[in-house]
Image (cartoon, rainbow, N blue to C red; front, side):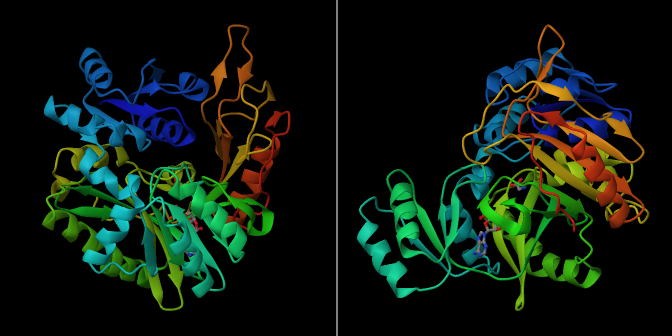
Length: 418
Ligand code: AMP
Ligand code: GLY
């Protein structure tokens, strides 16, 4: 199957790797230096956020399925444009993408459909600063403030410092809505459910590590590493997540006429009083995907196509369980300064092998110059994914792989999966 994978990150590299491995022909648009070197795949220069350009490229290349990696093309209406032209697309339309692009919309949706989540107050008026100040004073202790719109994982502040909270909140209110949530204690899981608009299939749970530094210190990032499967997500917990979070979400979407063909990423906090939903994303997680795909059995490409074409009920595999003999532990190798300001275009001096039985190296937004030198692109530059028969071996292998990535200031958290 000819599959176009939209995006240039590590998640898209992993998607293309999995599809190529299953014998499909991925075209990565625009891809990165890693996908350019992936056997069975090729890159195509393209703006993935431009619906007309994506439709035209899909037609020219005879694409049978478009898989959308990041949220921006979905929010821009790329999936709607493709479907209007009869091109199957794995990814929701712009209306459903609001589950991610507006945290205010998502929170109201959760409340309408009884999906358990943190108690939340909403501030939408730019002049709500005084109201916010009163709210913070009335809720001493830890609070979580969130910008409603897209912020690449950086629109969230957890703090118990009223001054810091107020200054973050005022900055958000200048141009967006603000949510203030009760702080939930527990452990986080990333749960992915594929939907075709009627049926859904849940993948094994992964665990991201959101904080920038070891010991879960420092600011939130897009994710510094991920393990899959997450051992604490046993059958009983997954059944509870299905019943309390996933089922009401999909029945709510049907009731609201939001037919959903793609993946819903449930950001879950497992608290003492059960799983609660932190957020929806309308795409796979990054870096969760880099750790999750290598432990899934064959047939992933068909599953994406069946979801895109509205026939998951005919999919040969409905419960996509992790291979029992396989664990993955991925380390994000980041640029110095990330998630704050960081240099781009750093020359990469050396890299481990892209693929061996003990691990995989995925690139994010890298480019190769005409002189052959590889350059970093974004803040999270590579995901070094260790594989093994168990999580301990996987972690050791991932650590060795991450340590072999060499560029100025390369940094990773050594405690992923510890
Ligand atoms: P979000 O973008 O809503 O997923 O928030 C980013 C990260 O902030 C989450 O992955 C959590 O680590 C943390 N977080 C968000 N909301 C809460 C909350 N209500 N309680 C505790 N931690 C939270
Ligand atoms: N790793 C979290 C995310 O993709 O949003």
